Length: 161
Image 1 (cartoon, rainbow, N blue to C red):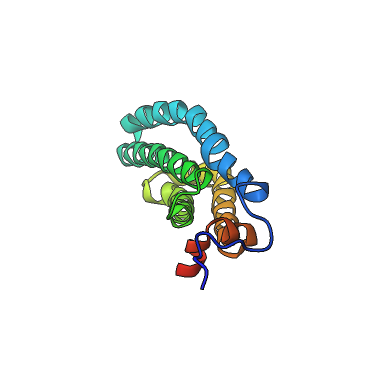
Image 2 (cartoon, rainbow, N blue to C red):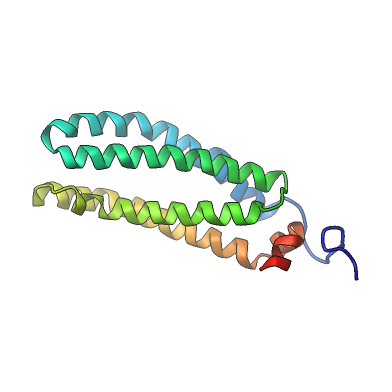
């Protein structure tokens, strides 16, 4: 029986197509958005701390999580790019973390003990972006599980699944 790591499988192979687009999202687009948003979030969190201590704390916690996810995203993307063992599992876990973070962000206004008008405004302005994060993470996770290119590029991952 041929070794799965060296077997030539029919179909697309390599970090190209949608897999390359995922790597670009994980390594470039996502981190750039985070880098641009972090200073404003930190500033907003520090200002909110005096008015609504719990909201300021949650916002700073959220900012810390976003920074962690940015680093995790870079690691997952580079692992996929280099076709490292376990890269698909790492990227899948990263995407699950992004979805969980999106859900946390949706609940943030309710956890923060804000006045109803402030809570309503935050929900209205942040919900679309959080839903995009959750749906995007879900779609990319699904892609990693069903893609022929991913199975051909990371055959040991498909054998373990």
